[in-house]
Length: 67
Image (cartoon, rainbow, N blue to C red; front, side, top):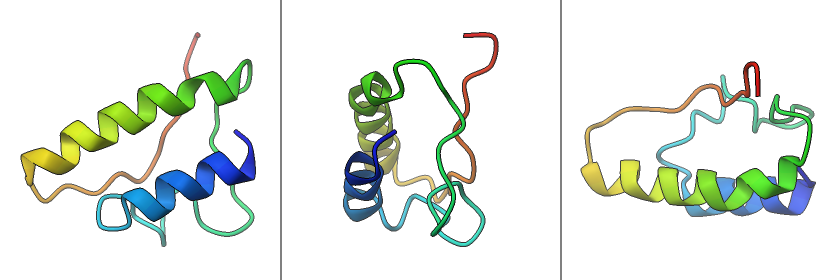
């Protein structure tokens, strides 16, 4: 995912994303490969829904497996 899109998610969901352990800390990247920018809308909608639930969870990893 391009750095700008990654930073947008970090800016929008700072309380949801675990910035110390997650793949969004400096120097790290999301772990999916092909068409990574296409995942931005999906992740944005998912994070938005999770944030509205207010369940107190933190996201520490996002990865594609056997995509």
